[in-house]
Image (cartoon, rainbow, N blue to C red; front, side, top):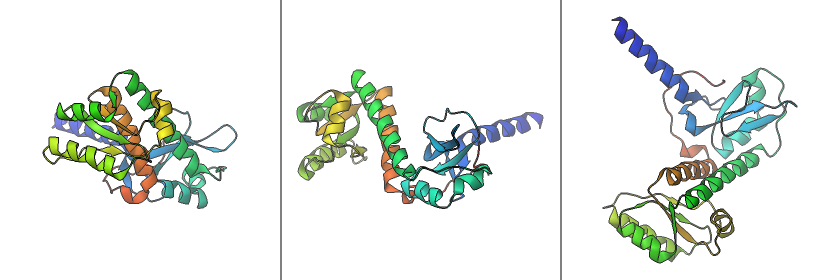
Length: 223
């Protein structure tokens, strides 16, 4: 009985580490579906994208409309029980931080040799079953996107392969050190998976709170 109780306590501790409650919507979500905010030395709310800043934090669903509403409703001060200065463009600030994090991750994946460019090389990687996601510039033509997405879908037997469309040609070019980057493919590897996770987080943020489903968890919205 003691052993079973210990196992249950450990499970609850793990859940507490991975689940938080949004201070605005009160929904319970996994930590990677939320963003932590803290009060800076000058009393201003600061996004803690990497979850490393000191001090008590407040968690919000990682969605632009949720962050915007929280700023308008002064949810930070209520959750932290302290005076908090909220930047007017907080939601846009979070967007930039998430985008910068994703582009930095893309640069690392490229250095690791886990990104393929050019239609011929992308199609070859698709045929070999190495592609875990496609990346299309915002300016990419619909026909080009549809062609590559279709080839990837056919090779997986109908299993959907993620397609990132969060960045424009210039952003992809700066991250990869190339010009005219319209399409790319992520191949299997830890750095590529890291970029995919961060990029998908950015896309969910831009889609808004409708992109998130409720999860059961512990009643925790500050840390």
